[in-house]
Amino acid sequence: MADIAPSAGLPRHVAIIMDGNGRWAKQRLLPRTAGHAAGINVVRRVVRYCADKGVEVLTLFAFSSENWRRPADEVSVLMDLFVEALARETRQMHEQGIRLRIIGDTEAFDGRLRRRIAESEALTAGNTGMTLMVAGNYGGRRDVVRAAQRVAEAVQRGELAPADIDERLIEANLSTANMPEPDLFIRTGGERRISNFLLWQLAYTELYFTETLWPDFDESQLELAFQDFASRERRFGCTGEQIQAGSAVGR
Ligand code: IPE
Ligand code: IPE
Ligand code: MG
Image (cartoon, rainbow, N blue to C red; front, side):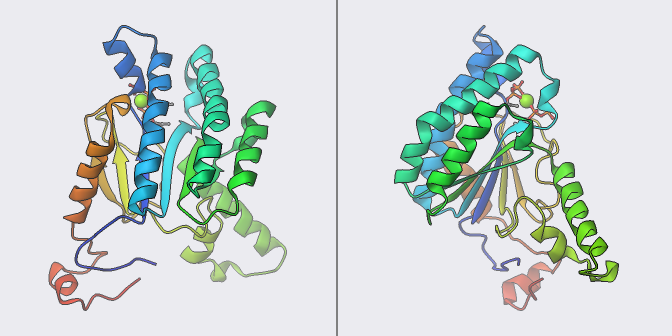
């Protein structure tokens, strides 16, 4: 449900495309993978900052379903870093009350990473603080296709008719089911595109783009994004006058 208020305030759900690691490394004449390693430190800081601020859900795009197209050695380093980061950071996140969830097609990952994911999710499953969703081997189109398949199966079982299919039902079958929609989308690294991230979910999200490369991103830059978000007027199809008068009708 969209929350309609004149001022956007603090985003409940922040979704970030962490981009620019490769260019950061290239600027320093380092291999691209050095940029990915540097990016992990920023993840830790951003997670902590969002949790402290009271953000309910933070979704980080770590690996897209298209990133398999990269050179095999880069993909392999990314997988190793994913395993190491989970091994190193889970306990601390657990202590901060963070619930970790990985969204995306994790079946494609090797056994070692799948086990780590299962362990980290199980350890933090009962936490009631911020939910950290890490999108790994995630594609927004695939997410919608999966939801459509699940709904089609329910129709086939005779549990519902095609006319019963509505937005709520699709939403309930997406990997982000039960989460509020993203309020604020941030992409670092200067590109102005969605790159198959949360396609359905971003329908009314406020978009924020920064030139800063991910390894250079920090709390002060995140605060700037939050301030920019707080100044936006979210209209959800209404007029600005309706929003200011508080007479807007929720979805
Ligand atoms: C984002 O940084 C990290 C992943 C996609 C895994 P990039 O590796 O895309 O960095 P650039 O865009 O090449 O600088
Ligand atoms: C999106 O970044 C995916 C992640 C940050 C994980 P990319 O760097 O892969 O996006 P494109 O290829 O520039 O669109
Ligand atoms: Mg990139």
